[in-house]
Image (tube, rainbow, N blue to C red; front, side, top):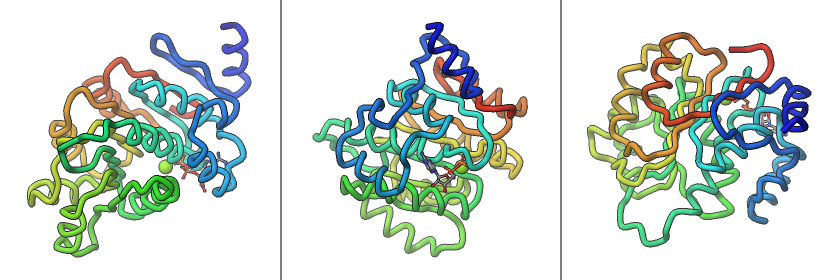
Length: 237
Ligand code: ADP
Ligand code: MG
């Protein structure tokens, strides 16, 4: 325990919550399958970034997380890699349709970046990812979603549109990521986020990432996460 505390301190990681898993030092420590390790190596990722060292074991253990770390710290892979593991862990005989992993991001640019990062790791497994955001034809998006996917990366407004059009169902969704939650609030997406969360089964795993934690975001986190571990890296938050 003392050693773990020292290691966290050396990385400027602060955690709160009960039974917090120890941070890893390498991707090998995460127990990823060979295909995923190859995809990680292909990206040129040699070792996990600081937020990844602490967030990966927490998320892989199935816990909810609040992750606070500045832009550029590698938060995307911290939720994408465990999402791939989560999806591969689902029992094969699932009759339901619709995405298993749902990622919400504030802007189409961010959603697109996450989509690209997701595809790099999903490809090796034949996991299908769809991007859902404004500026693309709704009909094309409708058709793509109807064809089926395991992962949806979306801006909140367009995802609500697609849900209203019944382009997808959230029956299978068990892994929800709210990325850049503070920016989504700044852009006025709180009602859409609440609506989306309300359509996803309560026994889901929920991950919330943010560069800052304004009171309104803190309140939402308290309402929608279950026994989360809170991880802060560096001087942010
Ligand atoms: P954030 O979401 O925290 O702003 P990103 O997930 O966009 O950060 O990552 C920032 C950059 O770091 C990206 O170019 C990404 O490819 C790269 N990156 C992520 N994880 C690693 C890693 N373990 N090793 C090297 N580069 C990484
Ligand atoms: Mg990010």
